[in-house]
Length: 191
Image (tube, rainbow, N blue to C red):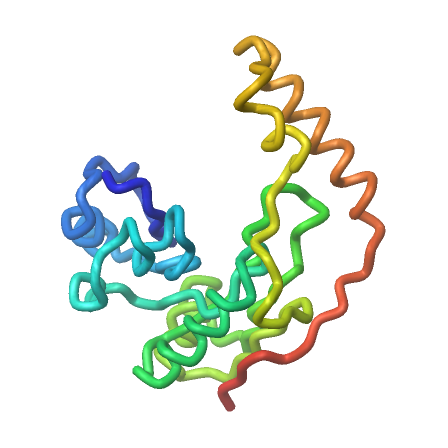
């Protein structure tokens, strides 16, 4: 309801609620995991200006400490604060296009099914490493289609053209960045 993001993993049914506590309860009732992506992002982070307090997220299973699309300062803040609080953590590519997959990797020692392995990682019962593209604290949030954002308040595409424009940009982005090898460094580990 506040336009902030929340991830539910391993769900069997659609989530019906739009209120935070009810959504978390629905995810857990299905045996799913509640993950908080880019917690400090200004526009849609649950610990950002539009979000809620940490107390309201006490039932979350894990927090993202590195978002490949996020600002370096937000990632640094999340990593230092959430690691100090001893909260389960993960990293994410926030991949909107194929070329973005692998900008951040959770390398987990397998211990059963995918669901069991992710649960073991978040409970620190198996070894894992977080690997991500090098970022510094002054790295800015990456925006897709920056030319579109620069002119969207002046020139509006007709609604029927939006899907075509999005598909064209996707093709452009994947062609331009799809052949790049992501240079990753270790940003976190648990043995």
